[in-house]
Image 1: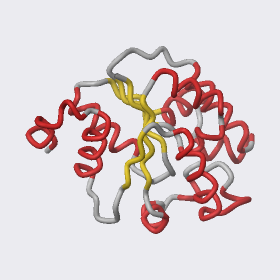
Image 2 (image 1 turned 180 degrees about the vertical axis):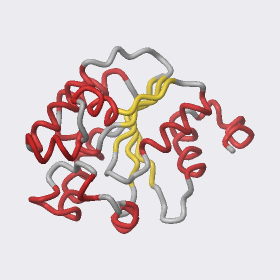
Image 3 (image 1 turned 45 degrees about the horizontal axis):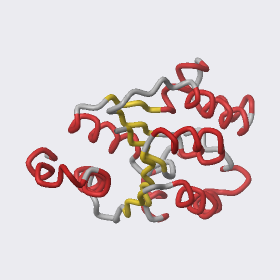
Image 4 (image 1 turned 60 degrees about the vertical axis):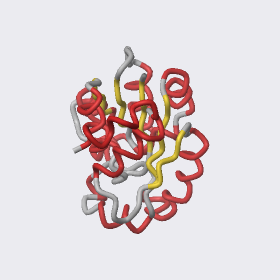
Length: 177
């Protein structure tokens, strides 16, 4: 099985993805890191120097270039939903899970917002992006995981496993911590 995590910057896609991959013995792929490694620069530098579309294209290409094998977890960049090609590629090959985190929680998690490389931030602001992207995330998701204000990483990981891998339900509590 291949599981793709989507959601806003600060939703915990990379953290939950790493934990999930560790617990399941799966490979972990972080598409933000693929973009950084492929471009030789940071995400914010791409946005500053080349614009939002350059980052969207770089992320799309890093996803389309993936040679996916079974048993991996993919954590995407928050702007992946702006590329229909990338999302159709991921939906055809994986189970897409949206980490739905309340706006107030996202705000508290993003202390590095201006250096993070967030597509559309200057034009729409964080709240505008949140509203716009929530619709897109929901439209592409096979499963939606509601992440509560007090949920810890183990809670989020457990929610994903229960929703996506219900056959492992009996083993979850024993292995999650």
